[in-house]
Length: 102
Picture 1 (cartoon, rainbow, N blue to C red):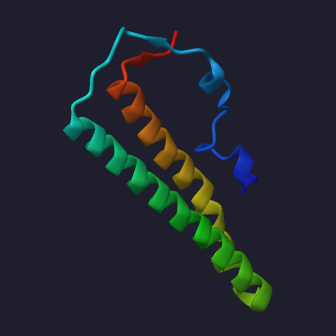
Picture 2 (cartoon, rainbow, N blue to C red):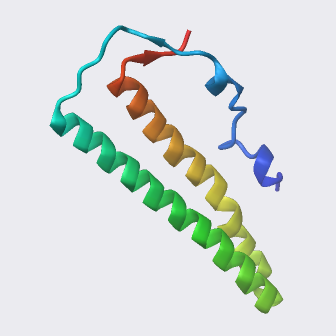
């Protein structure tokens, strides 16, 4: 199995540092702002849960090494899940604010 940093779900984020262009001024309604805020809250909650899975797996492996193979699988599933969760919110944020990659 490849190290977590080289798995398919973890791509080079160099393109994230590229300056974005806007499509012009953007006005969001209160409902749109609240919807985007809820999506941000959901993303933070989901990523925190994934991080807790990593911590819990590491602690269990330390306490019960015989469960290592089973728990390593859970541990290694978390980074790509977190990456996708953050990327999904980023795409929604970009759309809401009319941000475009050059």
